[in-house]
Length: 207
Image (cartoon, rainbow, N blue to C red):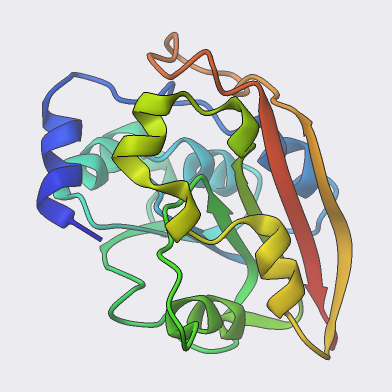
């Protein structure tokens, strides 16, 4: 993860994303009982704030200090004690093992490595009985400009993650679906209209 590059992207405009919760998160998590959640690459905090307002205790992590400051402002004082913001890079330091009932990874550029160390760190962070939600863009939608910038072939996708889960996991959802608009977004998203479909993995770790 290039922390400086991401922070520059955030500082280049007043808002990089919509501020609302991702549609897949709302669809897949609304029926789950609240617990402890890890929002990987939380950005400006839309998903983490949504979770916290629904009773989850959330840790939002990102490599960008600018994004985390905006996330803290979005949460406001009423969520103090329910959401925590941490500057962290999961490609360097794994989250605590077995600590979270939900590990949410939305559109996060997790680089593929031969030992899968960072990915296995995220999987290990899911508590027994907990849920992994791993969401990406359908590669068929991406423009050549995006492909040149992010090289999606070098990143993990949900279908690949599903194949690496191994024993002790139950795959509940592994599909491509039309992208849902962010929920209750406080401002229009400056995001990319060419992202029309999401690839979605939801898996449960056995108790």
